Amino acid sequence: MRPTGPLHLGHWLGALRNWVQLQDAYECYFMVADLHALMGEYENPAQIEKSSMEMVMDWLACGIDPEKSVLFVQSQIPEHAELAMILGMITPLGWLERNPTYKEQLREIAGRDLTTYGFLGYPVLQAADILLYKANKVPVGEDQLAHLELAREILRRFEHFYKKSLFPEPEALLTEEPRLLGIDRRKMSKSYGNAINLSDSEDAVRKKVLSMITDPERIKMSDPGHPEVCNVFSYYQIFADAPLTEKAHAWCAGAKLGCVDCKKTFAEVLIEALRPLMKRRREIAARPETVRQILQEGHGRAKARAEQTMREVKEFLHLVRI
Ligand code: SF4
Image 1 (spheres, helix red, strand yellow):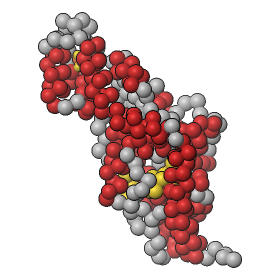
Image 2 (image 1 turned 45 degrees about the horizontal axis):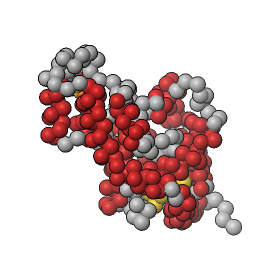
Image 3 (image 1 turned 90 degrees about the vertical axis):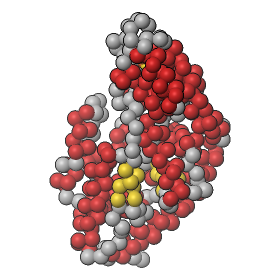
Image 4 (image 1 turned 135 degrees about the vertical axis):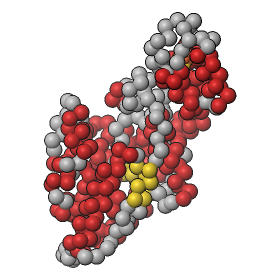
């Protein structure tokens, strides 16, 4: 995960809840992808370290367990850059130039010059991240499938050239992502300032819920609303239990409750759901040295795997060993 700012409800529902479960079924490696963050933030890297530490605090608060999984920082393991360099030598430029995410981001991200060598090679570094640990499953959302396919193609080309199999073919572990929009009904994103963050205080959550956009046709309390088009109601469907969700539907459609009260009710539901996580988050934030310790331990485990893979890769490639 790239440390690009505070994690929000979308990360929790879309990735972290799933990661927590995966820990019991797999040997998991969770990486702070700070080199990937640098690709986008190379002009302004000042926040990368802080965001990285805060992101790990969010992971731990959500239930990522360093006893079960390996948590580590990408830039601390130079083998990522080393393998990316080697894979870059066999990756045709056309594959990278055709990458749909690359083209989309060049178009969509204004104010940053992304026409860099590093940004074009982003999927090569991702392939290295995966192959270095010989991962056979990668938890991804739909939007990352093209990158994973590119990693597989790079791997096949590697094996085609060197006529030997070194890595398992990584498969997607598709994560179901409940549709959760930001408080302004756009995609939830730090850059839109419309996210409810895992590190928000209870008061901040209340304020954000109260500012959520609702059914635009419901002007007065006496207007019957349309819960199916209201963002607040979609949150009820995810976070509230069935009886309360049905009640909210009836309040709204029957014009029995105003939007402010409906939101106030929901804010308490959301805070209740987040409370254990918020409490753990505060406890972890009070002991930042623990986070560094966890990353150091994870580093040792990840580094050993990465070094072993690179020894094998170099042997394959007849690079000089002294
Ligand atoms: Fe949305 Fe609730 Fe208002 Fe209905 S009453 S429009 S569900 S906030």
